[in-house]
Image (cartoon, rainbow, N blue to C red; front, top):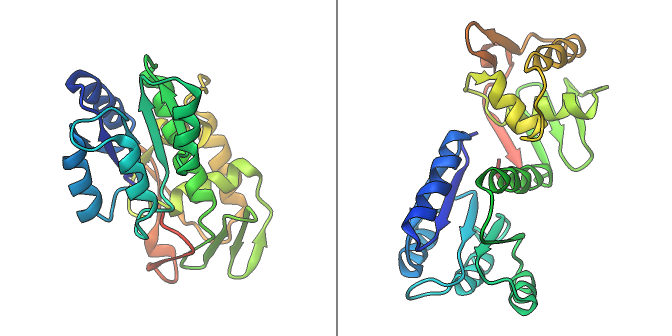
Length: 237
């Protein structure tokens, strides 16, 4: 899935750097440069998947925006990262007391920031409950997968692969995308490890739902599924 991320940062250069790194990592960033503009987006856009909030903003502070997000039924379960130059303990505790999911202080590494974004989104997906796509059902609370009501004996990595594919049912995924999302940005080995794990996953599935896309990587083959309508319960994927 193409995750949408609201980046609220009044420093133009920092905002642009964050957005460029997010784009390079296949996210869809929406920049906002002051609290009022951010509030308008929060109140009128239900599709934001993660919020990155500076604290010291014109018009409305990041902490006020944090409270708004967590009091909004459409957004309250979505992760919020505080990104700020304020490093004192009181402000950090205040942020977590208002249910911030992460707190990053400036200066920061953009690469590490992307890794933390990825981790927050991964946790939000894994706690989302139950995902059904055709004959495939994933229980992300129990880390269990079923095909036609038969439990699949998957390793954790195979489960994460299948979860990533079912979260992107219409998209051709490159090996690098799969590595970034499933293995994480700390993996620097041969990307062909993806092929090995997909080969093993295919052996455990009755249907040929993972298709090879020549020159790109892999995709979930919807035409093979008995029901191509994705049903999601207990959360947003």
